Amino acid sequence: MLASLIPLFDDAMKVCAYSIFAQKENHLLNPYREGTGRYDGAGTIAGLEIVDSMGMETLSGDREVFIQMDNVSMYADLREQCKAPHDKLVLLLDNSVEPTEQNIRRLHELRDQGYKLAMRKLKVSRFEEYRQVLSQCEYILLDHKRIDINKARVYFGKVYPNIKLCAVNVDTQDDYDMLTEHGGYNLYEGPFFRMPVHESQTDVSPLKVTYIELLNVVNEPDFDLTDAADVIGEDAALVISLLEMVNHMAVNSEITSVRHAAAMLGQRELKKWINTAVTKELCADKPSEITRISMLRAKFAENLAPIFEMGGLSSELFLMGLFSVLDIMLGKTMEDSLKMVKVSKNISNALINGTGELAPVLNFVKEYENASWQEISRIMVLGDMDMDQVYKAYLEALKWYRDLIGNAG
Image (tube, helix red, strand yellow):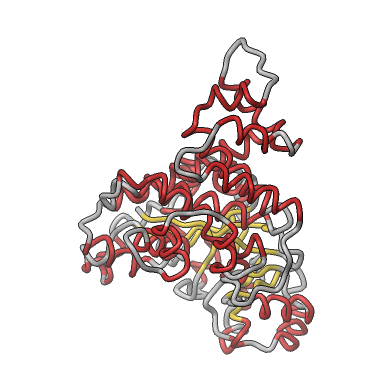
């Protein structure tokens, strides 16, 4: 199993839903599944399996989750496979679902069971042919590059006034800004929110400079716990977060000193906590998804260490993932950002040049994040990697993030 969560944003850069893009098999190892064999086991829907095993809170924080469906899986017993609230699940249909009488009847049944419906990959020329399908959909996903939003807004406003329009393949921040200013779409999907910064334009705020100072203290090869504790003590949010976490760990103890808390955690755990906590603060003025992507990349990369036979580099892989959006956090190019933060040459080479021994893991994490399953499958075949171990590494990263945010709250 392979699965990745793709966010959908509103026009205020708030994540309103996630799509689960999943693949059951490595098709490069099982090429027959690209033919008729792909229907084997089609009654088991990967997305629903993930929701049921992980829970809505872990996956989406109670936001809606879009689940891929086709003309075969739409006839599966959905209620048996997933106990999640039906109104939080959006069944994402594709153009394999023809507007036949049988399919339309099935869609009515799914709506009656409380599921929401969405349509994607439908050409404009077939809108009228799909009238009875679209009339039951809550959402339609449209490639904004291939459609005139003015005409689409008029058409859907008259024929399907309750359907929400979602722009997909939004590649850049400029695209997103243009689309939101122009209006017409309700949701936006694409990599625009995490594109690298190509030109340094902003000054770093004094507060962020303090956080960077703390990062540099703990990322020294053998940092002093007292020095780190003193820098933490300058920020009330970090003090509260640290004391809450340590007191949660230490049963029946009242730790009120930052230095005491730092000593209790020890150098390795304090370093990891500080890097994580400070990264969250550096992302505070950015869309929440930047924090999430930074944390997931960090933990996923760390979890992949044994799979890539890099067990001794797990700490570096964690930091590499954590700082992989440092340019977005600081509003500077990655090269300029890393001049402010002390990291190893290994991490710097991977983040700036995409070179060195850590770079293959970063590339893998990014391809997985994009649900580029063909490329992921190719890498796994060449590296003789076990797909289930990769999937487990990703799920464990999701659980870790859930617990991290839960404890922070």
